[in-house]
Image (cartoon, rainbow, N blue to C red):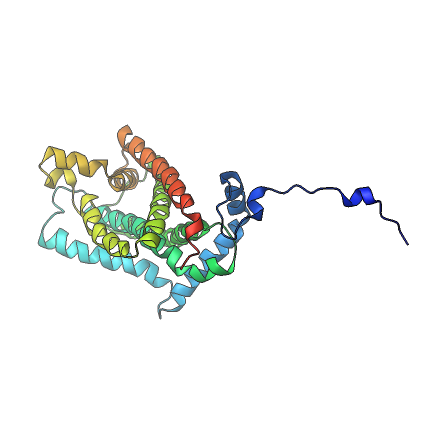
Length: 291
């Protein structure tokens, strides 16, 4: 029989102190990011499953991803473009409106989905140990997956309706602009996820606020043409969604350079909301598993 050296039995094993705490305890930020990265495949798989599950519940399946914003755009066109005549002075109002509706809906779907992410994931939170930030992240990843095919359809529709657009190299600027919008949406998702976990009624406030945000973003009318108060105009233009929408319109519809202040505002909103949103969400990590 092999003899065991008693000295070997006294060898100590050092483990991080955070691993010996309660389940669901907030880990150090570097470990938290490492755990998130290790679960990237889970986030992608969960996002794909949610996309497939949502479409299977409808008879038309994936078609509703495109039909929903198109029908909303048609409704807005009839009310604002035809009845209220907000289309006057706007070149290619159809493209102007579609870009506003499609891109604004992406942000709002990310926000509303993030608001429900913790509450809808309670069973998973109580059953498994994982960084809770994976839940709002998977919401935004899912919305990106939903948005990409609808974006292609939107571009096709814009190109089919007169006037024909002169596509320039500036269309490539849509990629960094959308990336900034995704970062901004992710920061919003982090914030509302914790707020709605703390105060469930905050979901109703988000729904009301979405209406004001829609009008303040110039989705279906020109702020410069229809808003006469200088202070109100400046406030509406500080709105991050205004910058994102205008950059895409300038790049795709009009082939012109967007003002540098739009890029600076869009970048500032995206980075600040992402950092603040994550830290705000991270501070509440220990509370998400509680009933």
